[in-house]
Length: 130
Picture 1 (cartoon, rainbow, N blue to C red):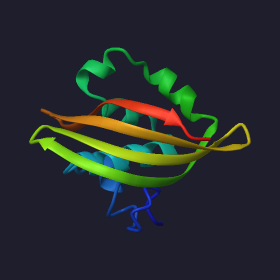
Picture 2: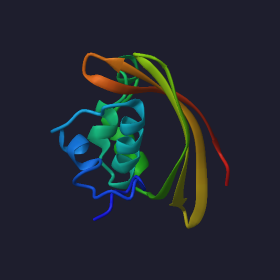
Picture 3: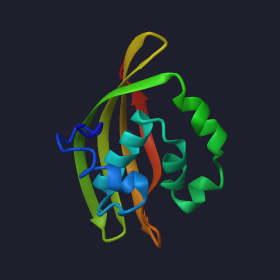
Picture 4: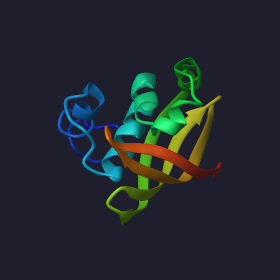
């Protein structure tokens, strides 16, 4: 099975080890791809776990699970990746999905930080293009 993150690599060699916890993301881009895969596979726990510590304090796993239930993620396009320093990076992407019978595109510029557990998602500036 090809990885849902559109890397054209097998899931078992791409995001699979990250979602199973056998490997950490080696970069913000790898974490971004794995988070998209978690959205596509409706893995709320992974999404929650990969938020930065400060972000997790404001989130509830149940809310993430609910948000995943009616959306089908179909395509990821990486627009750009910028390594700011050893512990901070930004990834811009477009994520295509279907919700309520409509095709939509989410365009996002996301910040990532390297914490003790590895790369984590901090925040984004997003807008819907559809």
